[in-house]
Image (tube, one colour):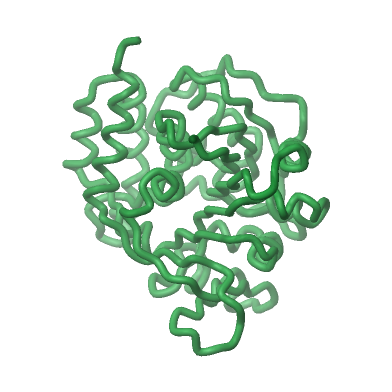
Length: 314
């Protein structure tokens, strides 16, 4: 049986690839996509999500959520993703419609109508929408099977400040609400996502599939990699967000352990830091399955296999 999921994202090339992977995977049933202001402003994140629906030929509904963090001014990341958020492909006005309902209202309505522990939330951007959902309607919590999110870091440090990863830094108050919500959480931080690098060989393998979705993926990765290759002297860009979907499809590719993770919301120096109690040196409850290792070859095998399905004829 397919796992029912709601994807909450801010596309971003890596969010876009996560969507394409999910659409091609029968193991998950995407009930809807909510977008949030993050990598680029909200008007671009929902357009980019709808573009991916058009490319994939799917009719998953897309909803615009919150355009700014719960208590702060929005920080964006065009310097990584380009002005469109998905530089590397030709941008077009999508045919897939934007739903009139607010993304937060969609998530609340969908969860309240669901059975207990039956819907998994997959946030790959700032946690504003999810934090707002929980803050506004805590009755949704029993309906959530698990939250599988991309954000945070431990040994890798931060990618936007010395100690904070971008998604958590953008809205630390929302992240704090999510991490204290009491539902199971699987967390893909930089410690694991920096292991899945889109090397030249891997991108060329995707390009060789020679279908429109694979071509778009290769184009986006070709642009996306320039920042990390320069910053880290890495052979390619890390595909952060698709790790969430890959874990849902094939969890055996990943290694993790249950830990306590807490969010710093007050310090000017370490705002957005994810304090991971990896060695259980405190008595704080284990609220997160912290993923720290991945079979990167197996990850790209899975991604390439699923992107290949877009070239299959009915």
